[in-house]
Image 1 (spheres, helix red, strand yellow):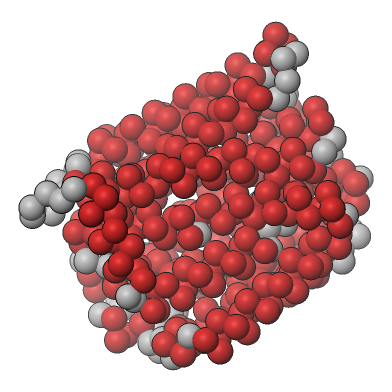
Image 2 (cartoon, rainbow, N blue to C red):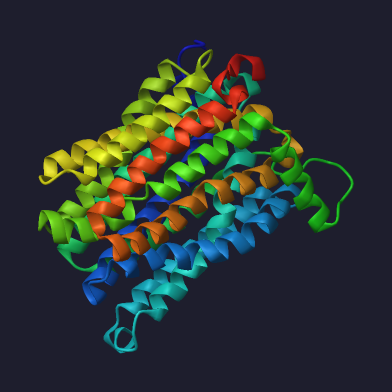
Length: 410
């Protein structure tokens, strides 16, 4: 197998089923995200309602994620993944029920309750994936596998919003939620078909809070991992423009749900293109500088998007936004896989999720709140400028991350 190409790794059946699980789960989640945003903004006309979606999801996520990581390190990983897929299916079913006129008449709280369930089950999705990833691939192929995982992830980010927007245009949010249920079921089926040793590593059982604290100490004592997580967390937290797309499309571009699907898909399309390129040119010697440059490009893309007044210009800047984020995803995942002991993958992945995944939802709440206070466009411009400041501070304060060479982690 060529050391410069990751595509031959797809010959491994375990990796194929694992990637199918990931794309099915992400399609379900992304279709729901598009449908919920459109449903709520049509009902309320308030950008803060979009920000509250993030808050409704992140609070349960924060509560469950540390315990999810502990369980992934101590229980069968496939069973936990099947539990999470079942939860995604139930979430979509609950949202489908919320579109019924009888429930719609009592307000939007059933929608937020269903999103809270999403936050709880999503806490298991990535730790399960990361723990099984290390079981289906040899260590020397982690960087290539991370690129393929990024392609899979971003393919779902491209297809999910496009499918969600198209389904809303064809029918309504109810149709989108039904398809999301199907995707969640297919993700569970792929995980059930996966044949891999998913038993937790052998070792003495630890009290749950001791186990969680051990994972936190490991991350805190690994400056490269901590710096990469913090850089992404603050960048996404301060630069959360995607959650405001329904308001931007309605108030600035004066477009419809088809434009929502297009713009929601644009960042993922950019990340997909970058992911494909990185399968042939995996990050290595200058990975630290590459990560910092990508974060700076992310901030500049936000500023360009906020200045856009035409659909194609907005789509271009969101494409760049996703491309820069895609570089960051591959570098971070490679760091995580190479630097984490197998016995701690679940806990470290959960901490990574608290830093990174939850920052999307907190960023949505922050963006909605700032849009309410400052106005939609000033809030976006402030967010892009703040991201550039975070990059500068990280480059100054974390020389280990700045000098990162991924070849030294092998």
